[in-house]
Amino acid sequence: MSADAAKRGPKGVPDVVLDWGPANFRALLIGPDGRASEQIDTPEGIQSVADGDFSGLLARTLTPWRQRRGPLSIVAAGMIGSRNGWLEMPYVPTPASPADLAAAARRLELEGGDTVTFLPGLTHRAARPYPDVMRGEETQLVGFGLGRDITVVLPGTHAKWARIAGGRIERFQTFVTGEIFSTLSRHSFLAKVAAPPDAPDREAFARGLAAARDTDPSAGALLTRLFSVRTGWLAGKIAPGAMIDYLSGLVIGWEFVEAERGGWCKAGDTVAVVGDDELVALYCRAAEASGLAVVTGPEDAAVRGALAIAALV
Amino acid sequence: MSADAAKRGPKGVPDVVLDWGPANFRALLIGPDGRASEQIDTPEGIQSVADGDFSGLLARTLTPWRQRRGPLSIVAAGMIGSRNGWLEMPYVPTPASPADLAAAARRLELEGGDTVTFLPGLTHRAARPYPDVMRGEETQLVGFGLGRDITVVLPGTHAKWARIAGGRIERFQTFVTGEIFSTLSRHSFLAKVAAPPDAPDREAFARGLAAARDTDPSAGALLTRLFSVRTGWLAGKIAPGAMIDYLSGLVIGWEFVEAERGGWCKAGDTVAVVGDDELVALYCRAAEASGLAVVTGPEDAAVRGALAIAALV
Image (cartoon, rainbow over all chains, first blue to last red; front, side):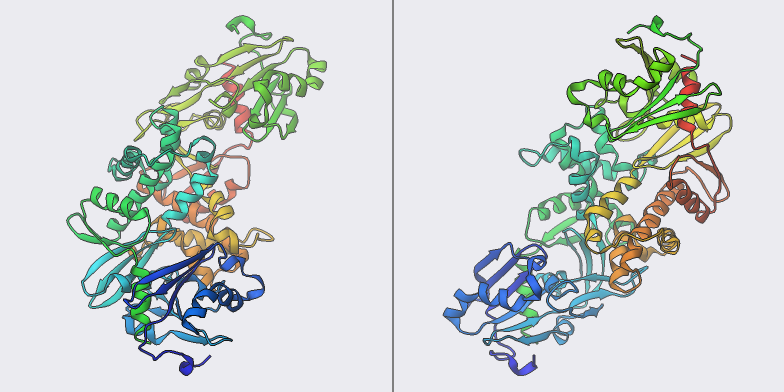
């Protein structure tokens, strides 16, 4: 590994942006316009790599592209640079600019001539009781753009709320909303009764949002409101096929309640929702139910961010 | 089924108290002193009963006792009287006295002469968005005693906080603390890292309690604090073997925070903790960390309550 091992100039455009997560492998080939032109998806996530042979698996998987382009320059953000991944990258502390992130990148030269530039994560040390962390979302934030002071919401298993100010990521906070949703859907009292809906039940989602936003003290807080998925079913008000969407509205709506109370937003504010899956639309609905105006980011914010940071390395 | 089918007089002491839950069967033989003198435990919970043949399984399992005592009078509370159980018993509305519960009991005469008296559940209709419910805990509350105005906490998968006033169960509220704990322990980001502790880690539990009670706004609310199990591990502050006990302290501590905010208690109050397992000690510690004085109930509150209600049928 050395800083001068790159096959491309330090300001060159990488060939590949790598999104290698715990349960899936995705590589995006970058075209001359700086956008992804092809992609390779495999189920070989970090967890399935035998004997730590990340480089071997990567080399084999990207063979078709190497045959066309020669040795590949690859940029990697996210969990592949975590303790359970290929190598543990540092967390850059907030507030952080794209240049701060680029300064902490590490370039690895592989046998065969490929290079991998690992991007760092981000930490908010002022969080209590322990520093908060993200890996990958900082790249999405850069791809969304740091030119406007705004609160950005990144939905996911561990959703992130981040404050952009003065061209930097000023601070952020994690909400484990997706984790609560998925574990309760699959493994709780719900799992025995709930039926997978045939199609998203918008009305049930809206009722979940409303249940989250109910300000009557008798509604209790999250530990109590979650039980309403069951009591609504017992009362004949939530059909088995509606329970999952109701729960989804309830937990996402509650995330916004907690964020409001934590000072991340208030009715009338504009927030951004950035992501690349169906959660974006759900979070936009939750934001609107909270009286917020919403802008969304490009679906390929992660790729844009990786290229933007790599250009500064 | 008829009210006069009982083999014992209406004020007689039943032979058996039945605690038949989703995943286990327990029957307690009541001795002449009104206490359980023997018990039969099997793994044949409600979910394992084939073709709805509850009476056949019950008859076979209690054969040894029937041979000694003749036809048995049995009292059953809890989930056996639920929608997924033997028959669906009604929920008596709050406020409810033991006599109100007894008035809703139903007696079933079985082939062979046994009788089963099913006790009703309890509902708090004023709860939002749907009426709250309990099955079995109302019997524990009666067994604890309704003679003193006090807030009673019943730990469990779906923990209940109940207010006793004027000899009645005035109102109650569910907190799904145990469900969150067990699903996150077994199926979340924790499950991959956490190591089952060799012994309960009191210090980790205490740190979880403290994390729940931190009043600094930067600590966020529950969806954020749950992530501290992971960030504490990443920061090297929570060892894999301490994560489960830390989580336990965090969620139980948070239940008390929510209960305080909901008006169930305030520092200086005395609350009762009623249960029959290791959760009682943990809840007592959480109560003390919240500045509450604690009394505990008898471990056999459920049996005492079943007998007390049955005596009024």
